[in-house]
Amino acid sequence: MTATTPTAVPAAPDTASPDVTVTVIVHNDAGRLPRAVASVLRQTHAGLEVIISDDHSTDETPQVARALAESDPRVRYLRLPENSGGCSAPRNRAIELARAPYLMFLDSDDELPGRAVETLLAAHREQEIDFAMGAVERVRVDTGRRSTWMAHLVDERRTVHGIESDPRLFFEHLSTSKMYARAFLDRHGLRFPEGIHYEDQLFSAQAYCLAKAFTIVPEPVYRWYIAPYASAETASISNQRHRLENVRDRVHVQRLIDAFLAESGHEPVREDKDHKFLKHDFRMYAGDLPYRDDAWLSGFADLVNPYLETLSPGAYERLPRPERVVLQLVRDRRLTEARLAARGLGHGVAPRATVVAEGRTYWGEEVPATEAARRELDVSDQEYDVRPLATAQFRHEIVSLCPGPGMALDLVVRTYDPGLRLPVGPQRAGVVMTPGRHRMTVPFRTDPVRPGVFEGRVRVDLAAARLPVQGFAGVRHPLLQLDVAGARNRGLLLAPLDFPRMTASAGGHRVTVEPEGRGAGRLQVRWQPVGVTARLVRPAARAVARPRVRTAARLVRGVLR
Image (cartoon, rainbow, N blue to C red; front, side, top):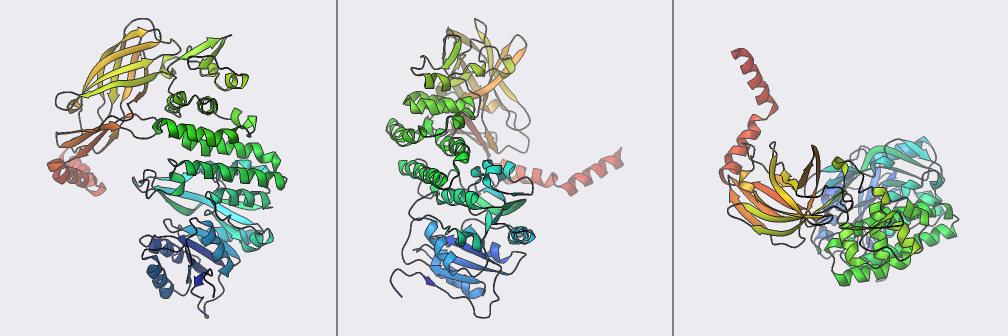
């Protein structure tokens, strides 16, 4: 055996030939590996094998993996002789050892739902297809919240004959949500590209294009645990967007996909693939722009702009206007303005200013210099000046935030009205939030500073919030309310991105005021019960809220009537 040959625990000689091989890739994840493997062994379809493919872990993973292999004859352990730094090599080496006609892939920090193998294998046995795919259940490790990844693409059972019939599927680029026919992979020599990140995107694009038919089932077949706010040291590759190398890798794999589409005769779906890049890949970086420094923004523009120039014009035209604005500001290297525009993405936040020329309204304070820029920065369709007040778009920014007495905050709030939608003169405003069932509104007056800009001062006493008797544990993002002639508008209240966190205690709660730290960067207020409220009041309230207790209380009330 050479130094570069992976070592593997052979399959038990008495193990029946499996129907499905599930490869579990792992690197330095001894703690979660048993959970992943157990999720495979618990499958309702038992005719399978598990290959643990270890990318040369240096923690306790080898010992854990060998113990798992010794405890069940369906489990085999493969250890790569050196770390490859990615997911591709461990998967490819496992494919070489796999004994089953159908293959699946699982990451060590995720799980398979109990009927995943049975569900996908049934789709293969119903008709001849190249792969079957199902729904991916995403679980937030910080909140436990569950959602379905790209739910609109997997909401009904169907068989797709060629990616051209539904190129939206490029958005579902995970290799782990699918069961592949081994013959399909071998026929096309389809393996995971080694030495690059975002290998799933290239592998999935190739599989979509090469497959003659594949079946989609709406049932969940993969449970994906995500930690969106993990530290930089522990974040997954896709969450390391703060690194310019991450941007470079993502652009590189897009170019590889483009080359494959051209070589394989799939140019007709290029616009759909370009739209996916703009709507998904670029959009993730765009949301982070407010938090990046000038050097990072400049490096980002250097990396993405040459590639953006190669994309189909139709791909841009399919985007919402706010996303097109951010893209164009980056392409024009108006990077400070790109930060401002990015804070409004997905939230209906207006720009600070617009300029009108030849009957068209443009984002910012200057008329764009080129025809292309004028096309992309034309925000006339946003109708800042004519929308009803309830849906009008403004921009509310906290320009000063200071602690007041007790649990009070002294705010200076500036409102930008680029459409000159508000009447001349002072306006009635308020800061609104609802911790629990009772809404808290703190009124104040905001005065005109110059046309389209208003400013006001307000003291928000958090101790005045009416909290539930059992206390309140949660986060609230205050809104800015405007009342004009009987009409009302509420919008985001943007905070400075870097003010120091403030904490105070009162009324059985610890209250923290901080910048949101992601996305738009809203003002964020966090309540956490402490003391007697946490130890006694909340547990008692939860006990009373149990169904049996509520039912008994209703019966008692009925008898006493």
